[in-house]
Length: 250
Image 1 (tube, rainbow, N blue to C red):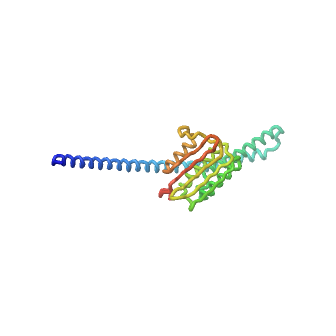
Image 2 (spheres, one colour):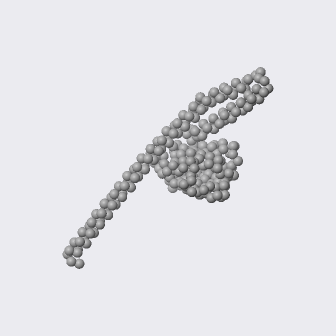
Image 3 (cartoon, helix red, strand yellow):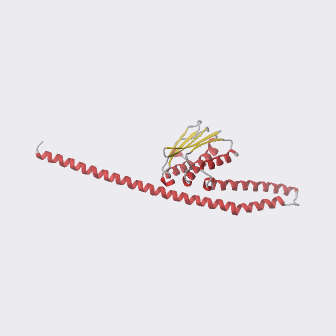
């Protein structure tokens, strides 16, 4: 190889190295910018969720402090009414029963808006109480297994609780299942949530996701986690979630 060819070859190698270095630099920079943007959006969404939970808490207090007493007074007035005709007493009895059902519904809504996990009761106990409430009004048998080495931070625990809520609501409304199993374990810096039912199943085409599944997917994305769904017609439904326990929640 003569001197000119050597120079050309050397220049080519140097140019390729410079271009490669520039491409690598811009690729790393784009990755870092993308990651910063993702972290910014995650923090922004988390702040929005916190504001939403505060609003839920306010609504629950209003239901309890404002509407609750009014319903109780109406219930008491009907119960103490005397001298009404037989036909009127029948209507009053139905009205009293309706008010009683309304009061119970108020309590149920308030409990869903402000779960026990917000009151320091802990995630395990909160989910157990939630499932027990639905066991009394549903034919589904719920099984819950929890193996956590320590209690998750309140914010993080609340997001897991909301996922469980959505899974159970979907099961009651759509699955026709007889048994639902929920498992919550901690392993390798991750919270793993497993859901399984023996219901009628549904289409796994993600383009046909309902509001509930989209809501869960958005929440998992916000938590920088992973979600997988497996469902076949007539063979039940399974969900798997992996949520990182990073410093944001500690």
